[in-house]
Image (cartoon, rainbow, N blue to C red; front, side, top):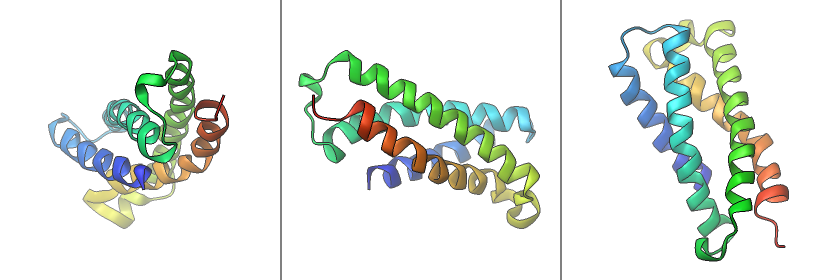
Length: 128
């Protein structure tokens, strides 16, 4: 549920950022993905901490945040690469038109969660 909420917020934010970019190129598209993912990292950490793994942020050690950022970096890299592949190599531009950027980002974010959720459960939020 947390992933869905953060994902929807991220998609909306990416659309907002896309309207402010000077061009719709792979470079500027990549910028929008990276900026939105940074927002998603912080929001997801707070919500996962509180709701998914039911931990109190006050009781958390800095190790959890550092580990979460490391896993998020892996997820960000996977999301960025997959979103480029989905959009430019698999033809999302032709299929989804002006929604191709957000559609490719959404598909990539969901796909990368298959990697990041187990890493977070194992490395970040496990009971110590």
